[in-house]
Length: 330
Ligand SMILES: Nc1ncnc2c1ncn2[C@@H]1O[C@H](COP(=O)(O)OP(=O)(O)OP(=O)(O)O)[C@@H](O)[C@H]1O
Ligand code: SF4
Ligand SMILES: [Mg+2]
Image 1 (spheres, rainbow, N blue to C red):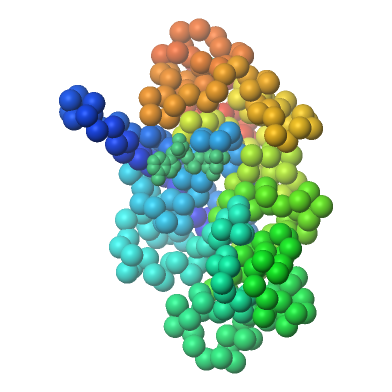
Image 2 (tube, rainbow, N blue to C red):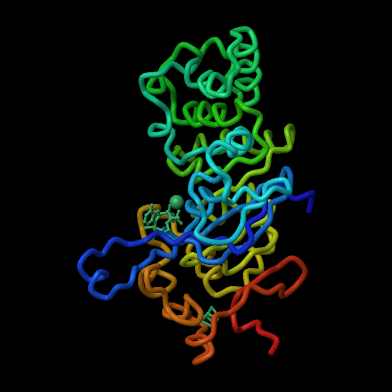
């Protein structure tokens, strides 16, 4: 792997659950353990995929990495600097380098702003005010995301653009400050299948030309294999497997990853596909199952050890990490 750009070390985010009367009575606070002791590194120019069912903690992990939220525990190291607990003031210089592209470009773009204003706003916030300089940067970035010719788009509102064009404006906005790391949270899941490829190609292009690194969050492992270098799978706030994209999809080891992959070919996108392969719904992250968190649904359950002992993420073969007692050496 290339030089590391960002690293999560034992990262945790526990959201306090407001239960009112009961928690007062018990004098105990309950937490949603959204991300619960997760470690990984992402290299410069790497596209690192994060997959898993709804509620597994993907978005929370992404927001932690770019410090939109503060971790409950653990560290985030960006280019060798610990940014986990920097104040908003000290974070300002990092904000430019760490950006986010959301799932829904309708929600993330202000409908009352022209594309030109949407793109110039981040520059102005960071003190770039000279009109000629702003216009030069906007044109360069619009070419990079293939919104060309730029002048055709600058004076339009978001509703005057197609879904793919809107997502490219959102990507362009994230690029205005020359970021080194972008969290792309399900960036194509709301787009029509026919225009997904063009947005994915923009991401690949940005990596290839500018060496931007991505955390690419998705439910879709087939898509992740296509675009990512490595993929990690999360379940109830824990990382259960991490490997190169091809190895994870073609030689999955963890029973949960296997179930996710078996769930992929079902054509009906509205069906809850994972529940056709493994029983039941994902348990509550407030009080996750003991031992291996997947043991209540695991088709390969091997008894007490799964129920009582939490499996550690261990390197089973070169660069292939799995947290499952099936592969424990002891
Ligand atoms: N601000 C918050 N306050 C309380 N709980 C939260 C908060 N944000 C997320 N959660 C909870 O944390 C858990 C993980 O949520 P997260 O959004 O990270 O999952 P996800 O993997 O991104 O899911 P999806 O695929 O649906 O986007 C969920 O149980 C969620 O309800
Ligand atoms: S540790 Fe046990 S319950 Fe957990 S995934 Fe492995 S076999 Fe299944
Ligand atoms: Mg999410």
